[in-house]
Image 1 (cartoon, helix red, strand yellow):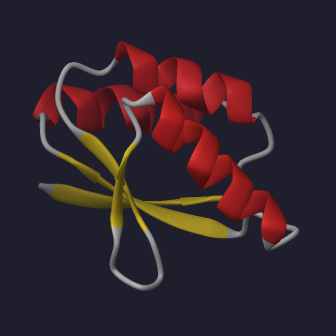
Image 2 (cartoon, one colour):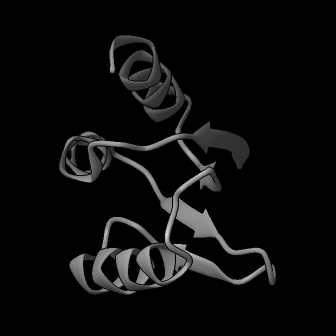
Image 3 (cartoon, rainbow, N blue to C red):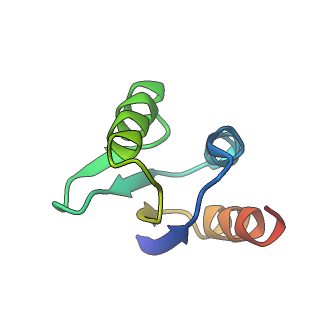
Length: 80
């Protein structure tokens, strides 16, 4: 899996719409090393709860299994 650091997410809906378009596994890697499956709506909710409890989204790390998904996410980062 490839790890991607994403910084300054301001449009969470757009980010999750991009994640929904991915074909392979996409996991949020927490600072404790836990992994949440971002393809799961429940995990999306849990991750949002955790992120917003910290009051800001400076940086998150996601693990991406499919190389096409890496390209999709990088395109999201470029165009946001």
